Image (cartoon, rainbow, N blue to C red):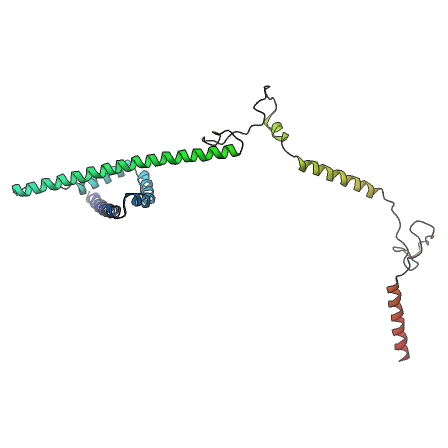
Length: 258
């Protein structure tokens, strides 16, 4: 029982501290609003309001009730009327009246802000609809195609068609696929087949002789006659090769003389 009482007191202290902080924040916000104006304050405090709303949504009913009780206990202070004169009672009544007036003015301001925000939201939604209609018209769609919750359906047939289309979605989808790319791929494949057939039908000739010997000839194989296909005499050497050979011979002769 003592532990529970201590925990309750600690919780109460925490709640009181949190409420005092919140009250200080509200007072600071009110002061800023008075200085900067209602419009600027509403735009600046929108992000903070969103985070506060998320925190409030995550709380349970019990937590909200406890916070409400703590806030009311801090705000509504007990009236100490014992030992007060008539003048003091009048002052106290004026203070309470001024507080009520202030609360009523705040309530009215918040209601008016809500009305203006609702009006601005409606205007923004109308602007968005107009932009979406223009976008749909540019794409050749129905004006109301993009204003709904879901994207527009893809029309796979003419809207002037009288007969019902019995084809499946896959068949209708493949109707508009391909085009120039498919034609080009078919032409390339036909060219490749022609070239490949020509290459396979080519005469398989033997390699020409090189310095009187056929390349790849093994020891003991008979010599191939020159009349056969691919057995002609070795091709004549070019002039550059002949010049190189002459230079090499001259260099060898000079070395021998030395």
